[in-house]
Amino acid sequence: MRSEITIDLRAVQHNVRLLLRALDGAELWAVVKSDGYGHGARDCSGAALAAGAAGLCVATVGEALELRAAFPDPRILVLGPTAPADVTRAREGRLALTIADARIPEGVEVHFKLDTGMGRWGLAELPADTRRITGVMTHLATADTDLAFARGQIERFRAATEALPASVVRHVANSAAVLRLPESRFDAARCGIAVYGLSPFGTEARDDGLEPVLSWRSELAQVKLLHAGDSTGYGRRFVAERDTWIGIVPVGYGDGFRRDLTGTEVIVDGVAAQVVGVVSMNALAVELPGRLAPGTPVTLVGDGSSLDAHARVAGTIGYELACGIGVSSARVPRTVVST
Image: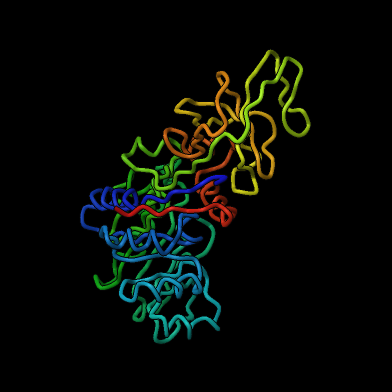
């Protein structure tokens, strides 16, 4: 086996329970769009609901209907814009829709999105007639980076919605806000990245007590000695300055281990090892402390080699890496652990 991904649903449940404790009575709605950020939407939804999540959030009606077939009871909120042609499907699937104009569709649960500073999907004011609105929401732009701006958004939302009846569900908080901004919690929170045990702050998730859900393991397919002046990989980006043992791992950007992860560290036989040379489509090289046998285990994600750490090397965020692995790894076997 070239590599294997493991999805630990026990970690999903741990993370949901941790977030629920922080929410102190507000509901948690698990965001499972983009196939659960690459972790598997159906499996992670089931685990989140079993741990106490009260609803699910997705980006499209298509995503929602796939989950409705598996989960007939919980609220499923479509966060993205919905084409008029999809309203009938949403009604039949008992979905909740996010809207951002005065056109409120009939016969479907509606959540109106206020734009309080994200500058994206949403309007700055509530419609004049709110009688058919079930929920009101906004999205925080900087809960992970600029708490002052986020607090301003929260106060604008509070002022705009304070006259609404208690029956209207108000929801603002994302993962970062749940962990840092108690005033953002309102009636419910839409938590995504923290459910999967990744940090919304670009730090190590374990700093906030979160447990990573995804791990990825492979092995050394070949081990070779480079002499001074020898190189490995395209473009000779790594040239040995001295005799150096390297291991070839049969995973590359075609599997979701991105080309810009050269320089990151993986775990080889329990020890950190740097990725050297250019990551190829289906192979990468690691510098070894000495000669190791082919078949020696390699942890690409897990055992202290986190997606958050990889993201810092690549100049991106853990979200993008997780989604990319999910898209690219149809060829990578997956094991789902639930007990």
